Image 1 (cartoon, rainbow, N blue to C red):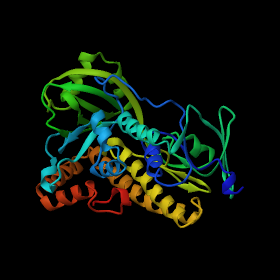
Image 2: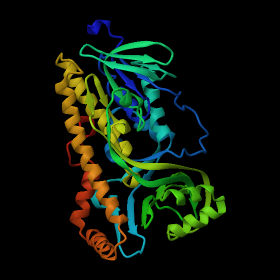
Image 3: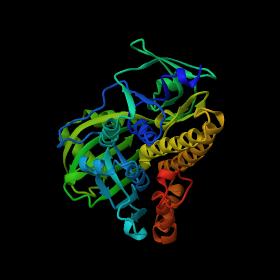
Image 4: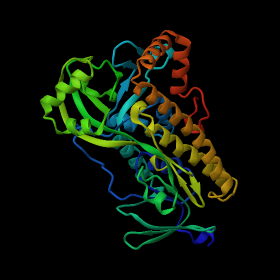
Length: 406
C-alpha cells in the first residue's frame, strides 16, 4: 500500500500526557496524525479538588512544555513548586537534603496533577486543529506489514497508517496485540495514594522517609496540602485503605515521624500494585512504544512521567528528521535509533532506582549502618550533591533538542 492510500502517517494510541506530548511535538510538520483514546479526557473539574494522580515534573519536562507552548496554561491550571528534597532513613540516623539554591535554580521541580498536563496539551492541539482525535474508541485488532499498519477499532472502523505508536499505558493493549513481551517482576508491594493536610507548612519541600516496609513520600501541593505515596506490604496497604479517616491520619503521622506535625485531614484514598516492567522491544515493524507501554518503574523517585515524556519528544525528533530527509518514518534505521537511545537512558534509571530501593529495603544492621553513613557523607560532600542535581536539572546527559538547555 502506498502512503497516498494511508489514512494517516502516524496514529498514536493513547491521549494521556505522553501520547499528547508526542502529538503536540509533531504538529509543526505536514504529517497526518491521529490520536485514539478509549475514554473522553477530563476537561473540566472542581478547582478545589485535587486528583490522586500527580507527577513530580522536573525542570527538563518544564523546558519541554515551555518549548511546546503549554507551560503557561499548565501554570494557570495549577501546580506546586518544590525547592528542596529531604530523604531520611527510618531510624533517623541518616539524611540527605537537596536545595535548588545550591545550583542556582529557582526550583527542583513542580508537583502537577496528570489531568492538568493532559488538558493543557489537548486544548492546544484542539485549538490548532492539526491532529485528529478519535474518541471514544479502542483498538481491537492490529496487523503490521512492510507496507503499513492496519488497525480495526471496536466500532468496526479500519485505519491504515505508516506508523502506530503505543502510548496506552502499562497494560498496553497495542503492545499485547503486537506480541511484545515484558521483562520484570512484582515488588510485592502496593502504593497507597491520597491528599492530606498536615499541621505544619510543607515549606515547598518534597519529603521522603524510608521505612522498613517501604518509602513514604509527602509531595507539596497548593494551600498547604500534600500528596502522599505510601509504598508498603499489600496486607498493610489494605489495612490503611480500610481505616477510618481519623485512624488513618494518626497512623500516617506516626509513620512520618510527625515531621509535618499532626495530619489534620485526608481525602479519598486509592491503592495500586507496584511492578517493574520493561518491554523486550521498543519497536517492531511499524510500531513504536513510548511511556508506560515501554517501561514502568518504582515510584520512589517520581520519574515515570518524565521518562515517558522524554520518550515522546525523542521519537518526535527522529520522526521529523527522517520525514524532512524524505525517508520512511517507520524505517528501521530511525526507529532502531530511537530504541537504542531511549532504552539506554531508561535502563540507567531503572538500574539506579532498583539499586536505591534494594539498598533502602535492606534490614541487615551492617547494611543499615553503611547506608546511613553513605547518606550523611553524600549530604556533606557538596560536589557530589551538585553533580546529582545537575543531572536532575538536565544540564548533563543525552537529551533530545526540546529538552536541552538553551
